[in-house]
Length: 83
Image (cartoon, rainbow, N blue to C red; front, side, top):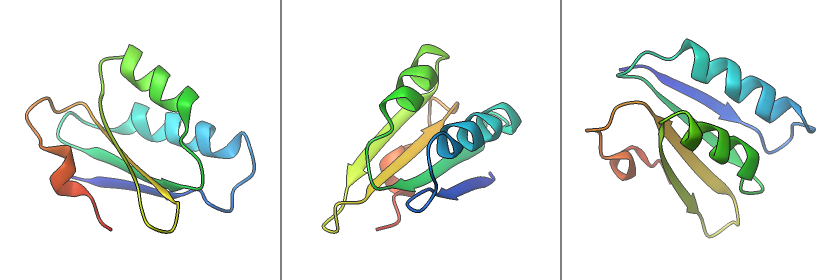
């Protein structure tokens, strides 16, 4: 299982979405994508959900969003949360 990670907190729009979509294309079924961002990336979440990916989002105490996306339907995404 490979973790694709993106800290998008200091990236300007549309870079986080562009990079995220590249990672999603590269991922194998057992891999997952982990993003930290200052806002919930609604367009990314909608695109990923529409393509059958599983999603988990969490807003931490510092108001950062942690987003986990995977193709693996069996993986407990909440277990992958790194807060």
